[in-house]
Every structure is written in C-alpha cells, then in structure tokens.
Length: 108
Image (cartoon, rainbow, N blue to C red; front, side, top):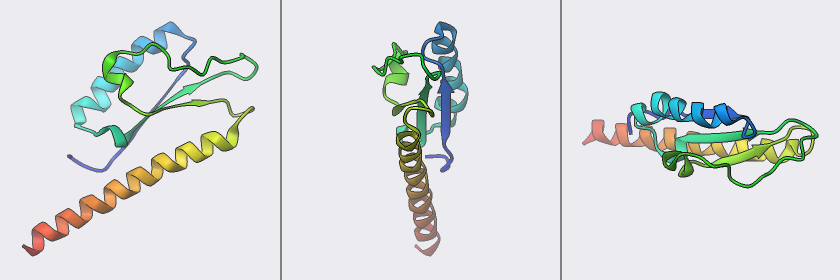
C-alpha cells in the first residue's frame, strides 16, 4: 500500500452520466494510487422525496468491489453518519498499521 489516504466518491445513482463518470474517478484516484478496497467508499446520494431505490446500482465491475452506502440526509442522517464513521475508523486503522510497519522496519 502506498499510503493511508482514502477516497470517497459521492454520486447520484439516478443520473446515468454519474455512473459513467465514477469509472473515471476510480481510475484517477483509486487504481492509479494503488488504494485498497478498505480505503474507498462510494456514497449513492438520493434527493429527498425521490423514493430512492436502495439496491446496488449497475456499476462497472471494478466498482462493485468497493463499499457502497446510500445516503438520504432527510430520511436517515444517523445511518449515513454511522457508515461514514466506520469508514473513517478503517482509514485510522490503516494509518496506524502503516506507522507500526514503518517503525518496525526502522528498528530491524
């Protein structure tokens, strides 16, 4: 792993162009940086009152491996908050493990 950064991609799953655009974002910010799945998060943001479909949208195969949450801040703000905190916890854990490996490589 190159570093312990993370990438969050927020998109509207009801907009077909967004589904194509996130493939570009994936290539530019995730695969080119060598990030792991745990360092990434897709957020399918739904407009309030849309009666959102919370099934997994039709994504490119490389995107199907990434964690996905659906967000609707009016209907379930706490669920979004908890999912995002879990993601941040994964990033913090990855950072801690990376620092420990680096310290051990200096010692040995």
